[in-house]
Length: 471
Image (cartoon, rainbow, N blue to C red; front, side, top):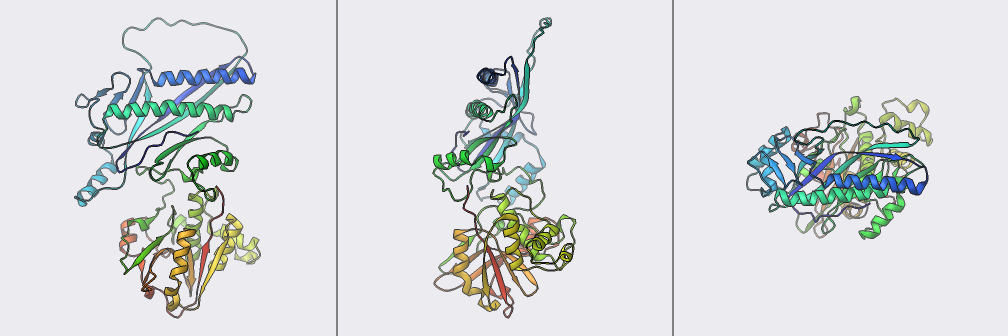
């Protein structure tokens, strides 16, 4: 179930993906005999991966590598002893050009974001030279034919001194290992003559754990894989009160765009404020930025609390606590009707909601409990530094705050216990523009705000969602 982990340091990932066809003829439905046939098929695939037929193509480049032919590489300017980082020069994509421009702007600064060199897994079908005449045989017998496509996906971490030969050795080892893990998961979850396709997922942890690859069977929900996750938590000495190995926790590689179009964690583009003897306490994990006018929904002027709630729901989804999608406005309204908080006419309306409604919806749709923190007037917000700091340390969830006619999301605080100085990291749902990180951060739609940001005389309620104790 587990791939070898690599200690992670600043550098690059080498990631190879591609399909391998699993085709197996079963002459018997006896479980033992079927398992033996499937195991032989996997063994043949491992032999194929370690044969001269395997080819690795560097995506968006003319570079091809035959790792088992003395690490043969084309074009001729590259060879087995070429450093892996030199491959970037041969890759041409819009993302590469944009990254180059960013690097030029930040010349002299060390880039802490790992780059990914993507490779396609391919196999040579024919060999050079004359081909023998085909021979056809016809055999009449009853048998069961299993056929599926294995989605191979292996990653190794490379440093500045690694050559193509070094990396290929590790990649072939990882591919072989992944086939072993896929075989085990296939046999473990096989139902009769039906195969569940094994799917690899990558999880990134701080050193020394590094990158860990786990194989899960497709179609089996996370709720039925708790025993496997418990084994993983024990092996990697992880606490058993929060998820680390659910599918939603899988590492998102830097070169992969998010398909839903939402920005993730825009606050990471901001510099932290400097306070005398101050510390910064931040939201933990991933969330999506939800704001006015998204999803073809005109909620300008009334939907800010709905959007803050959606941001919170996205956090629970992307940390693996829930598998349901982020609720739309009507789903939120229907949930409030279902719990008896609103009348049926509320669904489809443009009525505001507040922190109590956010608390009720989180409980109804996600099974998440929340604490409500009261602030009698905005001028008292600085006095809540300790409580907010403790929340981000222990729970790490986004906080919804409502006061007057406005709602915002608090993502963190910078707070000095000795001086009382405080800054609030605010994600503003009132933004109506495109998903432009530069505009959002430079114009303060996501930014650090001082105590004057709050209406000094308004009454505020904060909804502090609590983490469920699950794995």
